[in-house]
Length: 258
Ligand SMILES: N[C@@H](CCC[C@H](N)C(=O)O)C(=O)O
Image 1 (cartoon, rainbow, N blue to C red):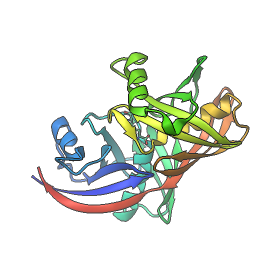
Image 2 (cartoon, rainbow, N blue to C red):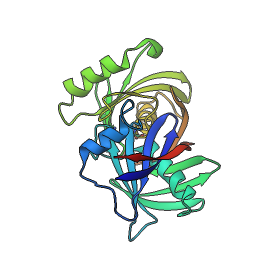
Image 3 (cartoon, helix red, strand yellow):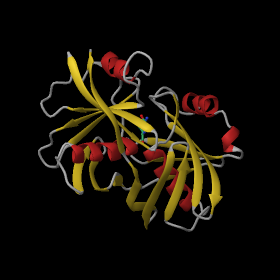
Image 4 (cartoon, rainbow, N blue to C red):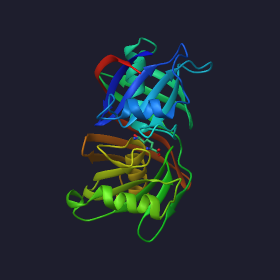
């Protein structure tokens, strides 16, 4: 099969995008997805995303991690998919689309995408970390000297040690100012540190506010791949109107024999 693909990145979290509106992609072929995401033998990416038709919204997002398995919500992937839908002419500056965790509203202007995330109802606050679901599961832990941390080693230890086979994404955080934080993330399903994780920085912003580390509901997050912004409103014991804002760019397009 000759597959036409597009490569996108959002703050360095990179994705193979396939327009699957004709339903040609073999969706249960785990080996094919992991091959396409392989950085040595394939195209190379943290994940693969199919853009599909949806009856009630502009399009549907189907997300796979680099290991080839379909997974939970990907915030940066969602932002990149909005840019892809805009490139394909499916949407203009505003859209609603269906993802695995429900409907998402988004806006796009000059390669900056603002993506509304699902409400967060519950934050587990433990003595050394927070755990919350922002579409994907996230462990959030404050550390010192984040630049020198071995995120691969420490992330894998927690991902398997605390969360078992199902796992969790692991975010390490250091506060930079009143409303800004430095974040590095070990991603489940990639099983490595990625340059940025959208649902991860969302989890960090909310847990930092919830624990009183910041009083701002507009948070700037520095990741190794660039800057993201997260804003939200408190909603009883949870959070609503959560927006993840940042760049989403097409890097190249091509065809691959597979
Ligand atoms: N990179 C993503 C998160 C993708 C899902 C994650 N790896 C998981 O399986 O939980 C993001 O930007 O949110």
